[in-house]
Image (cartoon, rainbow, N blue to C red; front, side, top):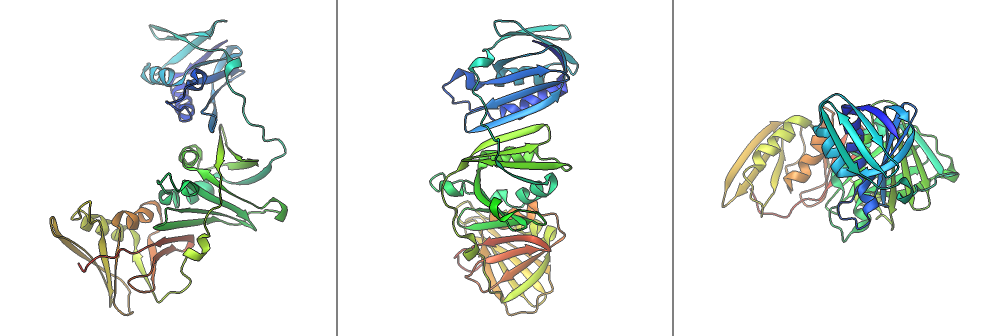
Length: 367
C-alpha cells in the first residue's frame, strides 16, 4: 500500500475518524484506524463497536491497499508535521513509513483482517433532507440533552419522522427543546421514531455541512447518517421516550417579544452575581418593562432593565440562568417570544419558526 496525501487532508480525516475511538477499549484493534487507499481517495474508518466514523479524503494512490494504524498516535503525529505532502508506504507486516520533508517515521500497525466489519444497511428505511436543515434543528435542541446517565433514554435526541416533518426533541426533565424540519415526504409505512445517542449527535453536528443533503438510514437498532464524505453509524438508545407533548403548555396568559441578544447579555451579566449554590435570576414583567435581577447574600446583587412591549399584569418568575441563556445562544433570530401562565408554571420561548423551549421555574425567595 502506497499513497501521497497533503498534511491538511490527512490531519482533517484523522480528526474526524479518531472521534469514534474509545481510549478505554481493551481490544487493541479498536485503538486503530482503518486506512484504505484506492484511486484518488483515502478512506479512514474508526469504531468502538457502538459508534463508527468513516470519512474520505483526497489522496494519490501509488499502490492500493489497506491497513490499520494506532489512531491517536497517528493523528497526533500528522497534526505536528509540516504543511506539505506526506508519502506513506505500508509493507506486508503492516509497518507504515511516513516521509514528510526531512523526516521519516515508522509506525507499527495491525492487519486489516482484524478490523471489525461495518453493519449492513441494505433494504433499510431511508430519509433524505437538507444538511443545513438538520444541522439547524440539532443546534436548537442539543443543549437540552440530559447528562444524567441513570436516565439513559434522555441521553440523546428523539427523532420522529412522521407525516411531512422531522421532529427533534431533547430534555433533561427541567427544560425541553423541540425543533422541526418541515416539507418532507414520508410515506405512512416508513414513519419511524428513535433516539440517537449523545456522542453521535456531537459528531453529527460537526459532520453536517451547510450545503448538500444528508441521508438517514435505519436498520434494527442502528442508524446511519451519510453526510457527503463522512458517514456516521451509531447504535440507538433503547427504550421509550417520555411523552413530550404533555410537557408543552397549551394555555398562555401573557406573551411578550424581547430582543434575543439584549436578553442574553443582560441575563449573563446579572448572573455573574450568583453563587454556585443559588444560581437563579428573576424576571419581572411590568408595563413596558422587563427587570432582570439576582440577589445572592454572600456575593451581592445585580439589576438590569429592558424596555419591552408588555401590557399585561405583573409576573415575577425565577429561572436557572444557564438554562435560560442556552436557547438564546443557539438561536439566530433577532427576537424571541416569551409565553407565561403565572410565576409557578413553566415558561416558554418561541420564535417565528417551528421551535419551542419549555423551562421549569425555580422556587426561590424574592430578589
